[in-house]
Image (cartoon, rainbow, N blue to C red):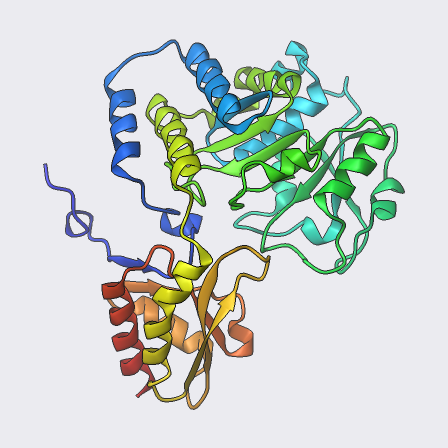
Length: 364
């Protein structure tokens, strides 16, 4: 059987946007594909598969326990539900019961962002009640503390380029204030590359996306305190049932984490080296001023940034890049300022040349 873009009448995509869910996130390696194939061809006691892969990952990551889930979003919802229910089977069967009133989840106001869906949707799906602390441009430990009540179940911290970066408390500061009041801290670190630092900073649960930095299949992972992870597993009898992950992706993701810890990801220096000729070519195009920029959240990720001038707006250029086949997707967050960014982590030299040719045509 032949699989192709043509079979399903699809356009090829050059992903210069980054590890984005709307484009299928990332590519997986032959190692990961082999693990998925083994999973697809065999049967398992699924509860035991969950426990044993979690134990294996926990040893690799030097944490008490880990649980593979279907996505980072599912990780947020199930973590919230777990910390509200605290191991109650009644709660697992009745996640929105009135018997439990301790449902408030405190989050810095600048962290309640839309990453494809609003963070507050995942909190609500887990049965939590959103409580915003601080302001859109500032949140201190004191802002968190003043919102804590007897109904507070947890503090949630979102580490992401989507969130407000300035004047925000650190994960360590969030952990300190949460623990001062005997509350757990959840850190959503979906796209982050460091699988150790947030536990080391004091987080009780940390959530990662499987298909972003780790470059695994569609999956997510929650790591942290053993009791809390067991409460998350219990959600499989409740809201987690609608978010279950298949055996093939459990094994594929486990292999991806192992490979990621062994090989790491592309370094910033390597990205800058690959970007250099691309930037030169882009600067030869009329009405384009190109340079290398670092990720706004401070990660070791470097991108090509172009400033569009002349008769075309950045939004028009973005739209035209997507129109032809292959469709070229970019980072659009600064289009209102006339700026387009190109993330090259999943882009090779041939694809960069195609981007240059297309931009040359568009800017004529």
